Image 1: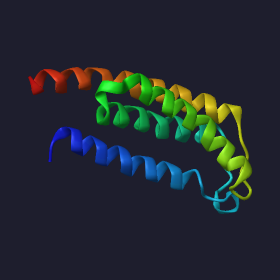
Image 2 (image 1 turned 30 degrees about the vertical axis):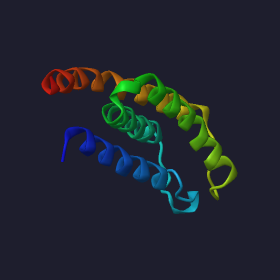
Image 3 (image 1 turned 90 degrees about the vertical axis):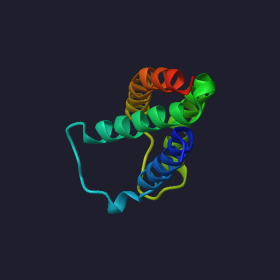
Image 4 (image 1 turned 135 degrees about the vertical axis):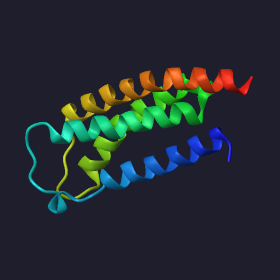
Length: 118
């Protein structure tokens, strides 16, 4: 399996996992405090940014815009569809920070893979 195919598979699986995690009804979630939800959101979106940037390396801008839209979309999803969940601007902010970290972490890996493919 090529690196690109592996990245696409990993990005798809990670995305599915994030969507499932963000769709758990609130009644099934433990009471958490002290920034754990923000850390989880940042981790979810760092993984998304990292993996999708490697999966679609020629369209990093489009990947970033799509994932930015997903940050708001998942909060609206939780607000309108998922029982006992709410939308939080703090979660969107954590998502954006995580996304930026993931994109930054992927940049040197993308360069390395591009050079290795030549």
